[in-house]
Length: 353
Image (cartoon, rainbow, N blue to C red; front, side):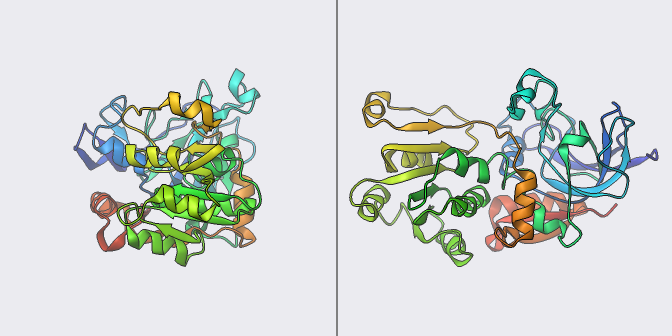
């Protein structure tokens, strides 16, 4: 890897982030790879970091964990990849040797888990170091572009979409209600379809996003809590029962409570939103309804299957990308994403190294 500097979006404390020149990364361990970032994006978690919602993030950290790129250099212990390979990268780092990795619980890896843009430098940058490259990189088929697979490393498979739907235990014919119709929620809706539910219901206060989810076939119906009683509407759809599965995809109290109240007795609530504050669970009311609540950080073990599903045309999340900017305009991209300018949903950042 050549020496020198590169562009990087750096966290300097709450509300203080800037595009800086920093040293290019180097191979630190034999299992590392250096990847030239060709496309990245901004995740809701990055927004939380920007505003100080994750105080454990150190000042000076390069942000971002959702990206694709080209392998630039590999360490001597990397055997599955070589320079020039186009790759999608998992946001969850897996050593494959610790107690948790040996049991398939990769999100709790003692030398990994979600660390990009959090505990180690992330991807809103020209080049990034990828630890344990053999388990964290995934080849992009030649017929697919970055934008086709941009979300497989995080919101489609890992922390949200597939994981949330899988945790819900969806059965054919079920009614699934997804509370929160942002990028996370829409990925959950699309993945829920894989289990053959009778209907997927999107719940959000943003009518545009409800319509967007229906337009692209991810949801059958949209409910706006500001206009309808969502719990009552779900019961009307299900002969008085409520949704078989609810997925909370926002990380806020109203959607959390909505998901709890909207599920039928003996149903499942799947939590995939990132919460900054504690939530109240009324156990005195829940236990008698036999409700199952599932949550957690993803294991990131479905990326190969999802890439194959994308190849086959069974999942297409590319429409989520409503705006594309070069990395040099990353600060503007954050503002567009957060303010939802021009109905922004996801903003792609193109490498310009």
